[in-house]
Image (cartoon, rainbow, N blue to C red; front, side, top):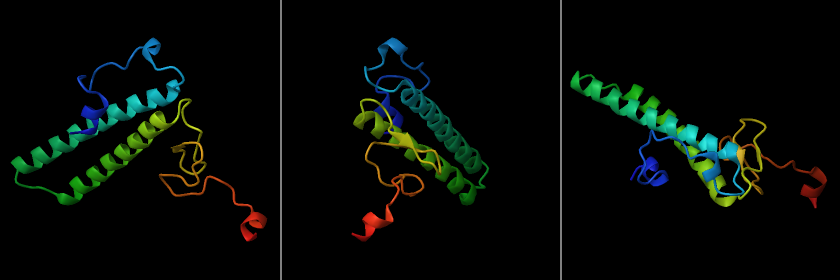
Length: 130
């Protein structure tokens, strides 16, 4: 089952986002908007990848390097969408912050960025020695 089918059961991928009054209480509307944008981007990229492969296949000229590059881009968007979904599930008030290096959202208590691996908490050298 695709991510879109799990996220939006019974809804078309191009359906309009829920009205602001239908949002669950305590959920960051910016995070919900980001999720909707990522869902739309993921859907378009997935359709484009399928169309690209189809066009290559009917011309009997499949270029795996091009397909792999596009699939990697799709995988990055999918990972970001997964992170936003985890934040929506785990946080009632949305994200705790964003990474100073790559601007990826993170939950409360996160020590490292899920995307770039940079430490999110400053390490005190005196506390690290003891």
